[in-house]
Length: 446
Image 1 (tube, one colour):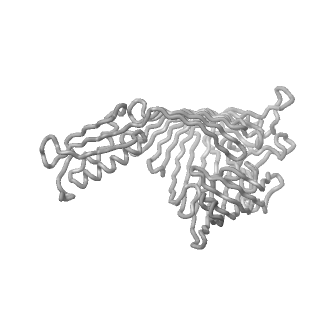
Image 2 (spheres, rainbow, N blue to C red):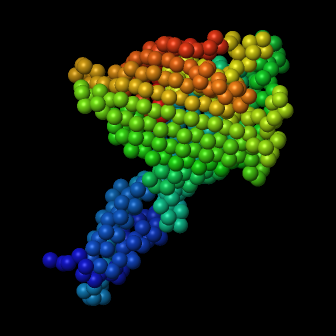
Image 3 (tube, rainbow, N blue to C red):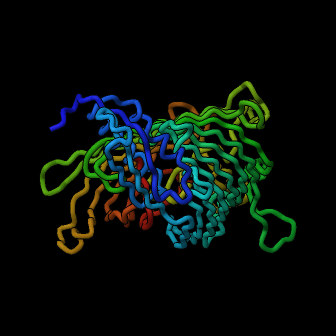
């Protein structure tokens, strides 16, 4: 029996099956094993190398064999590494449902095309309501051997807000992302050209059918921003959890270098899920607080009626809908343009600078064996929240709070969560958009 502290070093490495993959990709993952000087250290290094190589996503299988060293030195070993590479091309087409919209998506990717574990992916999507997206993403799972993923993304999006804000937004952006492999930390730099396109009048050529507040927003803007996001996810399920905790924090700083918008945005979200030990009943508490504040070092982002800097529509929060405040329509609460300005029936939604949402819920399995088999859960919930501009009095954060309660069914579809709910807003304002029955995909905080 060989002792764990027996001296041992790696002498030579032979790699087989790497038709496209450059040997340096494999060498980078063997560095810990190369530095080891004992049997235990070499074994531990090879186990981690196998896991790291598998996480690159370019191999079907990896087999590392320790063999007698060609040098005949008992303190050395040779390695035979056999890899089976995945195909170079993948393609996908499919449909998805969000709120009251249907999306079609088609994508294709090149996996490990030059042999350095990189991938190139192109995606096109279009929705029934006119949202459109074209994206090209170049990613590399390791940066100089560090456990960090690099993504370079170029995209053009057309977002349709005509039903709530009488506008479409066109976004052309270039972004770089650095993400740790445990996905707890992500650093992003983004440069984005945004253009607000007011809704055209249906019967009058060259005329617009949007509020004056939206017309004032109808100028292009260039954003240059750094963003940092932290996630600590300890839930037992990422879609329909029944135990664990979740916390995330986001900080975004826009206005450094180029660009004509400047603001600081911060957001904190958390959730806890606790099984009560009776009949599969679980208690859930979650909340999110977000704030975006225009900064004074650059005044080019625009000014409000009071002559102070203001944020743009593209950078504000919206609130309402199945994913945030149930019982209200999408973008159904918060600041609105006056009805006399035109636009939507109850006034165009303008978005807000301060938001908070708190949710308390109980869930339990549906008492029908067939439905329970598919993971269907019954829920009762209460949502409270608000969305305000900076000009609103601080006291209105609570005095104007919206509150809704309801019940419904929730089920996990693997990567998404679908809900059917009936909600009753107990506290609302006359300008809010009420929506009691709601069905679709949901992504609640934590």
